[in-house]
Image 1 (cartoon, rainbow, N blue to C red):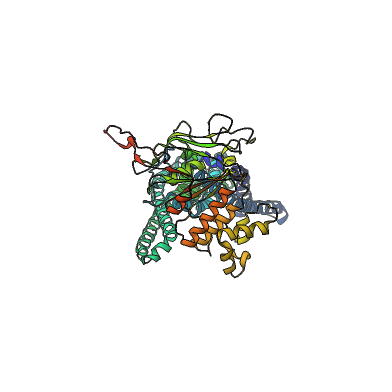
Image 2 (tube, rainbow, N blue to C red; image 1 turned 60 degrees about the vertical axis):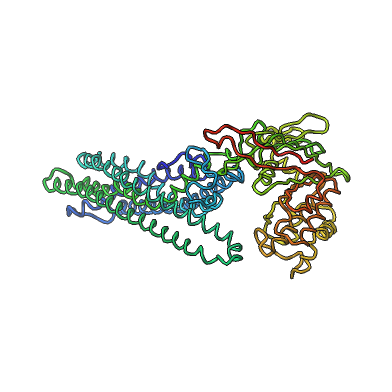
Length: 620
């Protein structure tokens, strides 16, 4: 990342006004420093010479100096106050941009490389095999938090270096050209050493950031899988790995600190010697009578101020390199845009159409499974009639196939969260030809705002295998905040059908029981019933399509029966239920079964002839 990356100003509005404010404060600081040096020289000259002075004669100078000192204090206060505020806002804006950019890339996206291409499909490119989601979580939290020293300390000193140092050199030139020449000759040595030391420090900080991200990602994965590890008695084993990662992070941090201390010593020594050369030259000329006392005093006061911004830049750079490295990785993701959701198929993407009836068409849809060298699904074709919300028009469609065949991937394609690499997904109205569903070309009649993907989501209900529930009262979570006529009666009827009423009766506060994020406080089966009950309350006419991803997984016989009863209720209400099914009970309930198969990806066969891939077709 450059000293002041234009991308930061482009992505964060708070950073733009903060830089403008810093420039204004820097100009004010330059004027106050010059005024302070001249006033001090004016006050000390008669004292050093022993000239007769009187209090009234010096009162204006003392008053002016007091005002200047107060002005510098105000400038420093304003810089600190608004720097902290701007840093908090900038970090919040970048964090939101990172999360939104990652969400746009889709659920199967990998971390992009600096040139904008996708990284390894198996995960992160820098986290040692940890999931990209965990890496993004680490970057958006601890990584971007390290940006605060960069904005609060480093950027102001960088602006002061660009404004204050040249201005003070010009003032010194007007007072003593010899001292100005010495400053001009020695000043370039400071950034030269900063560049040499900064290269080493930047590499060290990149390695430290990689260690921190790897530690955070693996700890997040460990916490997410802790129930499974405890179930198999392996919860203690990963502790050694976490300790090893912690030791690696400690060593990387100490290495960065050592480099920072050594480089700061080099810069301090260099600037101290430069100021000393100016002071010695001024002193010798004063002794020889080749220079007046007042300009000499002013030069001696200004000399440290000439080098101070550069010294501070070098010192604050080491406090900000972690944030700089994190922002550089954030911009790698932001610059990649939403390419993770774009496909190469001729009909890749999703959109919207009329919400009444029609047929959902999958025509030879194939998706590459990254890292496996297969297409899953491969050549999936099906025609799925959509319900109209009228009784008798519903149906149950089951996606059947072995594990890894691409059933869940096919669901993501239908949801618009993943684009097929080949084939077409379309919607065939009852009175027209098949129309490709695309997230950019929406039906202007069905979606006046042109928001195709949002309109398509508004037509369907999705219940994943592990529902993610928001925190709050159980009643509010189920109802979802949408206004409904007679909500108590509808809630009771839906809960009775899914079996949630028995769960509520066993809870201490009933419907007022508060649950945590993700359904903390409920078992897996209870969370599934909450999600089914909430989906059952949706308007069948507005959302004629229901998609379920293995809804009976991890459920006992009673929970499975509740799912079957809910599916029948949806079908009787005139809704199309698309379900990923393994169990015979769900397959027996299906009116239509679509076979999903995987096949070897021809592009993964280097030097081998492409074979015809077996396709997924509807079962007779």
